[in-house]
Length: 196
Image (cartoon, rainbow, N blue to C red; front, side):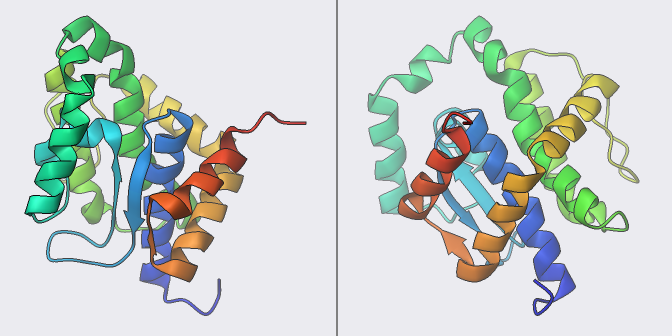
């Protein structure tokens, strides 16, 4: 990966952290990209984000996306997770998915600039609010994790345990720049297949 600019490699590791978490937690990722837009350097979209937090999705709303969200809502997933207890069951996984990008970027480059992760932290706190979990206020000057330090440790452990897959995800993103659902499915199968 030496031929890629450092900032692009950092973005790839960051988005790969989100992607691998979304795969492992079975949130059915739909798209991952390191193509920047006016809001961010890259993003990952998964079913749970679309269905429960469509306002957090980093896309320009257009008719195709509205139809996609409506189709997913017809499956009943959103109604199921309107129940706070059921949503809390996945709340910590959602937060770890939101925070895994920063932790993967930091593992790749300990001197990484965290400012691009601010939106991820805000999203994680939005998840906490929606799930009804208590959270601390954020300090604009640093990355603080919602709830307590246990989530930071859990996220770091998650990144350590899945580093091989995060590296593979970063490599795929650097090669293709954008992964759609058809690209992600075989990668998901590899990750989720039983270890022999």
